[in-house]
Length: 439
Ligand SMILES: Nc1ncnc2c1ncn2[C@@H]1O[C@H](COP(=O)(O)OP(=O)(O)OP(=O)(O)O)[C@@H](O)[C@H]1O
Ligand SMILES: [Mg+2]
Image (cartoon, rainbow, N blue to C red; front, side, top):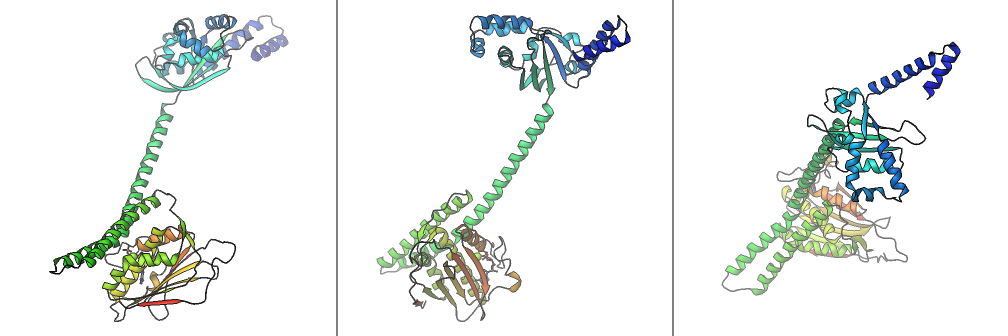
């Protein structure tokens, strides 16, 4: 319209009467060129026959066109025949693998050959008076190729006299392929990530159940020796067997907890007494300590505030630290072998666990690496024990550290925050109980 108006004005100033028609021709030429060279496949469609049918349906009270078309499928087929393509551009010819535009100037049903349901949706949008319809879909070209396209329809609107519908299609197969490859790449990465996590999981489980498994073997072998004696000692055999059972249970609980940690499940935190947790942990490792002729002393601060913690996980930390101390002491070949365990409260009110040993201590250069995963100075070490301890303690809101003692040996310590409660839950009594256990 604007172009025609502009043309008329231009014609008027030139004063030529032929100019109106020549400008009109020029305008039509520009319009054709625009359509022909538009960098997208375009169909000009005459949908007047359907507009007339829709008007009748509306007059007879049809409102829900989708439901109506479901019941009157013939109307969809009919539309495919009576709506005609009147013009196409070069891109449409090449998209449909046609030889020339004439191949495409026919009833539009061929546009919907690969997408059942699309014709119905296009009709519904027309009926509802929408201006545009847009959908990612597929077409079947004349040489049998399926192509993914972005299919858009622009409907005429009264009072537009031309009553011409435009269909455009953009080949999006490359974009979809790229997206598919990207999704596959992402899936591969996730898979690789999962395998890495599985590796970590297997390493952690192997490390943590090593101790209960060793205890089971040791108790089982002692049990067998007792059973081989002529005079049966039922009490001893029962004790050893129950140790085997509780170590096996512990191994299974450890697996459960580590799987939970890997799956990022919330750990089973309850209000617990640290001193009790240590006593329980010692039940599992005392035998190992005894067999290495190490003297163990415990100094429990009475009336420690209770802390929120996962019993099994905190026992894992205590046992890992004690196993390290046992290994350090036995490697060092010290004549006197000692491990001292202490609990206390620090200035911030946190509960503190400390273990001191009289092994060789930690080389100065190694101090900053000992909590790294896979850092180990032992021939048979994985280097995961302290990393596990750190992740458990951090998940409990506490901190863990290792240092050397002034007079030799190592000191490991972790703190756990005590929940702030009104009153004096921490009610610290000023005495310590010292239990030296000659082993
Ligand atoms: N009590 C200790 N005395 C001296 N060095 C220690 C002590 N505890 C830990 N270390 C040092 O820290 C390193 C890391 O300990 P960590 O428990 O993470 O691994 P690891 O004991 O070597 O192997 P594993 O994975 O079997 O536990 C040890 O190899 C050792 O060098
Ligand atoms: Mg270790």
